[in-house]
Image 1 (tube, rainbow, N blue to C red):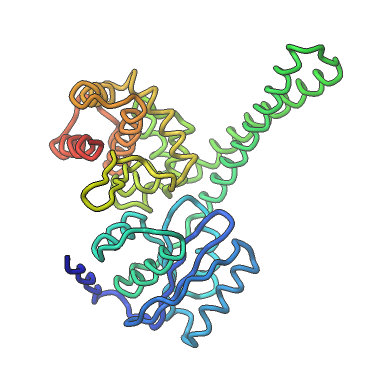
Image 2: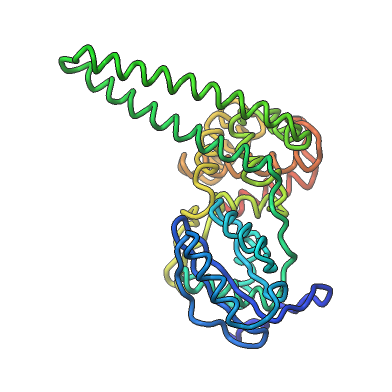
Length: 358
């Protein structure tokens, strides 16, 4: 098979002199650079730290071009990219943050398949030079206020559960009264702190009417509670970092990925391990409730089980994807969820989801 042609360069976009692609993980990131008509350099791995950021700056400046003529592209996967993107943007580099679906489609157009972090960084460098995606705008201050409180709340919950487990373990032994009292006090303190954080989240959300309105709209969907709604709005920057519901499923790591080798080895599509793990977990839990009480989700899942004989976990993942589609629809339309309303576009979306799940 002849290789696919490179996608055309968008002439309306500014031309840059030097390009870079970054594949970002929790503790490290991988960088590759290239000129417009040249192959990417060998990718290098750097740490997610001030020292790593400084090394990246030094690497980019070797090209000896003005900072705003160096375009750096990264994917909006998880949240580890935000600090690095903010740093580069503050230094004066041109930064573009793209949806993972765009990189996935670009690789498909070139007949390439992701292999590892180094390959992904080189792919993003090629995408940067070829497509020259639009520059990124840093998130508003409310993002930091809410996201850091959400992650802090998660840490508090995990700590409280750890102490509860210790207290339960003591209950089947001969507990020492002082230890039991200490654990009970710690649990009570953490519970009060969680309540305080919840109050702070609620108050800060009031400072942005659009974000607050989106949280309210999402809660009209049976199965999505307030916490899941807030996480959805915060992590997606109020649904602005994904241009479609399909892109959002990739962002959360809920999109089924086909695994095949030639024509002889094929397996049923499965969700990947990438994307935002916390948001994926929340949507998976929300899907369990929606499968029981949301009439649209319930009917959708029953069709999958009856006509395709899918396993429970697979159906539940499909229900989580359906929740994403519904959430995207209500936020973008500004209308609350109506289980009786299903336009033709929504029916097609549902049919498409079922087809992909098969």
